[in-house]
Length: 157
Image (cartoon, rainbow, N blue to C red; front, side, top):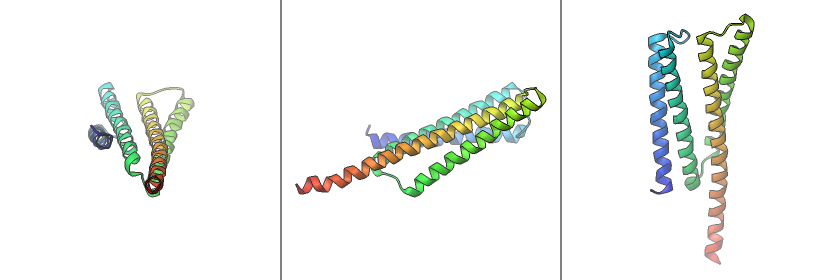
């Protein structure tokens, strides 16, 4: 299998995994509400959905990074990856800090707070994956441009 084809496969697998996790999470929210945690089974299903989404993001970023080796990527895409990373990290940090603050105020830890804290941690991790992927894509694009800039020189010599 060629590396470029592998990149496309990873992107496809990542998108499918993310979509499956998103659908599962949306279904759980529809059945049980966003704030209320019914039981450990619902929490477990929510964590599974979140993991599928996180794995999907990692696969998509990895596939896109491989494709950046062959095609490079545009400055607009780089800004979008950074924006997505910033939004994920900011929202995740707010969720984690909210949970920590609420727990320190009334000195109890509920299942709902654990869930919100875990969701925040997953968001922060998604942001970090996107930020790291952005850096890999930027380096791959630099290599892509450098190798194509040297090709005409080598051909003329």
